[in-house]
Amino acid sequence: MTSRIAVLGAGRIGQVHARAVAASNVAQLTAVADAMPAAAEALSSTYGCRIGEVDELIQADDIDAVIICTPTDTHANLIEDAARAGKAIFCEKPIDLDAARVRACLDVVAQTGARLMVGFNRRFDPHFAALKSAIDAGEIGEVEQVVITSRDPAAPPLEYIRRSGGLFRDMMIHDFDIARWMLGEEPVALSAFGSVLTDPDIAGEDVDTATATLLTASGKQCVITNSRRATYGYDQRVEVHGSTGMLRISNPRNTLVERAGASGYAREPLQDFFMTRYVDAYDAELTQFVAWVAGEDVDVPSGDDGLRALLLADAAAASVTTGTTQNLEFS
Image (cartoon, rainbow, N blue to C red; front, top):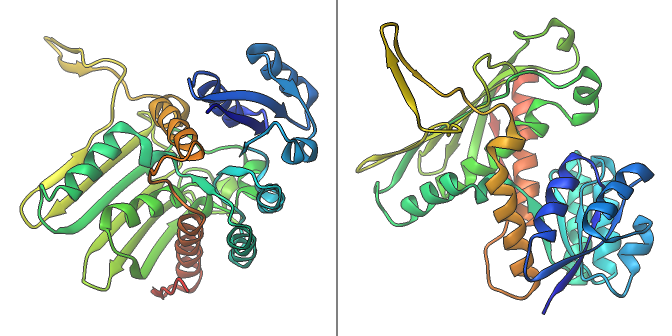
C-alpha cells in the first residue's frame, strides 16, 4: 500500500524530506504547504504534487501522513491537529521549547492513538547505526564511557539563535538523544559549562561553547562537547568505551584519498555542514518513517524521546545558570 504524504513547510529541511519521499517506492509525495508561495510552488513543480493550506492538508482524506517542517513554535499545535485527524506524523525536533507544552501535546497523541516520530536523524546515519549495532551485539562488553563531539563550522545568524531556544535545546539536543541511545540507561545527573568564545555578539543571548557531563545510576558516564566554531569543517565524532574494548566514529570525508609529498601527508577536508554530512541519514530516516506508516514493526524515535532530550537540554541550561549539578527526573 502506498502511503500518501504531505510535507508541511518547504524550507531547507522540508526540501530534504520531500526529495526522500518522492524517491520512495512505497510512498507518494501528494501535497505540500508553505506560508511562502514560491517555496511551495518550487516543490510542487519539482515533484508534481499539489499545493494546499496546512489546515486543509491535515484534514484531507487523501493524506495518510504529514511531515512537519514548519517553525518550532507551530509544531505542537500541528501535531495535535494531525493526531485528531488520524494522520501519522513525522515532526522535526523539537516538539516545543517548553517541556510542559510537550507533555500536553503527547497527552493528545496518546489519547488519539496517533503515531508520532520525532526527527532525530543521527540515529539513522549508517555510521551511528553500525556503532549502536556493535554495542547491542556486545562487541565491547558493558558500556562505561561515551564521548560525543559536535562542532559547527560557524554560528548561525544571531536572529536565529534568539528564537532557537539556545545551543542546548537546538544543537546539543541531538547529542543528548545519541547519549541516551548509546548509554542504554537514563542519566540521573547532569552538569554543564557554557562560554562565549567564538562571537562576542552572542553574549547575553546564548553560549557558543559548551560541555555537558551525564551520569547514570549504574555509574556510566557521557561527556558531550559542542562549539559553534570549527575552522576545519563540520566535526562529528563519537567514542564509546566498554569493559572489553572501544568503538569510534571518525569524521567521514568526500573521498578516502590520502596524498603524500615532501611537506607531509594530506587528506580531504571535512564536510562543510549537516546537510552534506547527514544526507544518508535523512534518506534512511524517511525510509524508516514510510515503513512505519505502512505498518512495519520498526524502531523510531518517539515523542517521549523528544521530551527526554529536551529535559536534558533544560537541565544543562539550568546547570550553567546556577553552577550546580542537576538531578534528573523524567516523570
